[in-house]
Image (cartoon, rainbow, N blue to C red; front, side):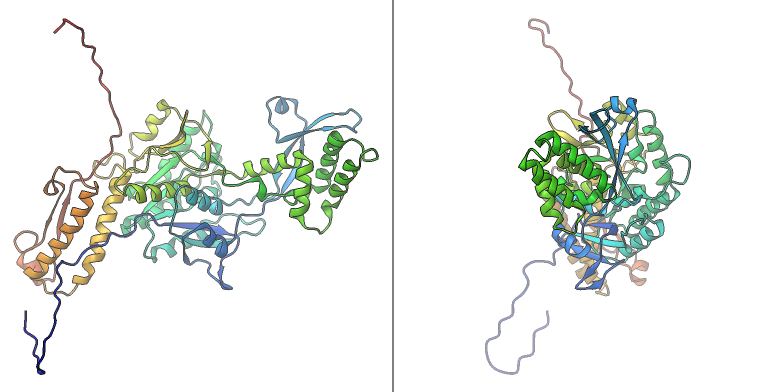
Length: 525
């Protein structure tokens, strides 16, 4: 080390670093949510098709608003078979008809528009979510439908954004179908393949995919739906994708988010039905002050009033209205699993480390899967011939909905079969890559090589000590080499290449645990 040239007499203090440069691990669980929102503005400035960071649901609501304000019609059910099967949303006793008796009704959404992003973000935070990015590709007015081009445009925005480690597009399963079967969509195929392509090219993120058409899954067609999905995802960059089946019945949407205003298209019919309920509970209005007060509130429903206050009075007096609002909540609580799984990834990464499988976890704010899968049905999901594994979410007695799979779409690969292996490699690769940027244009000599080896080894030592690599000793878990004659030739150095070779022993899960029992008989050897 060269001695400084001092010209003034005195004592000079010079501190020398005791440690080599260190590597700080990158974040591993930062999803980029892409979809449609109520609004998209910050301080009055539009932020459509921009990747906006958020850290909480409150951040999302402030910038992007809330759920699509769906409206519903009340339709009477007269089919005796449907009534016998319970295929109706609510019933009420009509005391005034020609033949007094029960009547049955369904609530049907008036618009074909449907959007999953907002409630998927809620499910993300209910399951342990943290930092995220949101890309709004459009605002949802009445009649708006999901567009492939809009989603692809939003996806292109995330390609330019540093930070996201997961791609989540719950609205993709709402793209229009393209054939006679409602589980076939060339638009979904284009979006799913572009998600995988972006992950494979950037190598710093994974895609969490939902299975298109799952909402139509039944015992006689679910295998066809899965087969179509496997065709849709293609055959490239499969190790960067993971998928989950089926959809989830959640509890993120509550009845308090609905009022009689959501049934405005059938307001006159609703007033009539509530008047019947009022008479059933309180008698004729000319005989009861309570009945008259309730009827007055029913009559006010078509006026410009404080809807929430009037709705509160009505639900307190008429349980049927609360039942209707609970039914509306149930209709909006069916969600694809990708948002919740992004939360599970975040939770596992934060509590156990990215090298642990995001599986065997009970999902929060989930009541049950929409389709029940047994062990036999899961065999082909988990270990298919083509390797394109679909991870199951199953309902277990005493535990509830549990994530029961941890495979990527590249299930036939010995290297990248498991989700945590792929994600751990991304974490290590990106952490080391970011740290080595400081050595670009540094002298390609022994000092630099030894510094790099020490820095990378120290980082991997930390990962191994936390249980992120397999091996009884650090030398069994990893090796790091960099130098002339080991990783580089003289020509490499002349060409400006510094090659660092890292070998890792990854941890894989105990996916199949076999218990072997043997009886020991006394006196028998």
